[in-house]
Amino acid sequence: MGRVRLGGPGVPGPLALAAVAFVETAEREPSVDPVGDALVLAGRLAAERPFVGEGGTADLWEALATLAAHDLAVARTVEPHVDALTILHQAGLDDLARAGSTWGVFAAEGPGVRLEARADATGAWRLSGTKPWCSLAGRLSHALVTAWVSDDERRLFAVDLGDPGVRPSDAWSALGLPTVPSGPVDLDDVPARPVGEAGWYLRRPGFAWGGASVAACWHGGATGLARALLEAARRPRSADDALTLQHVGAVDVRLDQARRALATAAAAIDAGELDGSVGALEAARVRGTVARTAEDVLRHVAHALGPAPLAQDARHAQRVADLELYVRQHHAERDDVSLGRKVRDLAEPW
Image (cartoon, rainbow, N blue to C red):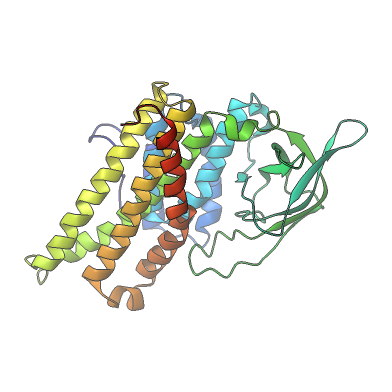
């Protein structure tokens, strides 16, 4: 397992180098707690200023893809941390990300639950309610959390997850990403610090870019599965099997499409070309391209390799389960509708 490249074979950047070193160590000396090791790595990456949009976007996405090709749970742990660092940086609050802190971003909504923010008489903010889909809430030190400040407007807050009013749930039954539980969290009168004005979290340029960072993880997960297919195709009995080679060829096309989409977007983001509605459109295109790549790779690998690795190779079976769950952060046809709306509303999208 090595670096997942977005560009050519040139020298990798510092974030990709750190990811490669992490993977090499993990392959040589398997850890009993890969997620814990990933949290340590996430903290170390802060020194490299892993901010999307400031010249190193491709390096960051290569790092995330490289980690994901090794273990999607590791990438799933690191990505929200670096996303939170980028958000804090954009808000001018780098000081909140103290050394040793580990961060998540809890911004999802769900039916029947609501997290509300209220300012007290002194102007201090407190959060109460339930927030769904809070990955690793029981292991992180801090999180950026969206909460409702009115009936129709949300605001972002920084929260210390060690506060006694924070109660993570252990309700996580997924076979995919079992070491990265993403259950609901109850908050009871928890102190919080505002990050940006109301609505800023969704309006900021980096919101769409963060979604593309997740797609880089999907790309890495698909690449890890594709490597298993390639390894099978190189075995003597399969080397000239036309069906196996057909699957390899189809997977290569899909991965190249995803790689090119990510590389092009990374360069455009760093060049300042993907702000506003144009940036949102391009991020949606990238996510859609990579999500379909992941789904196609899952199908081709399953058709080519059959049931044996799913039944007899625990690591392969876990990769499949992890990627199938993680890529469902893309909402399939619903996200196609959203993309179609963006295309419709631009004067000359094509």
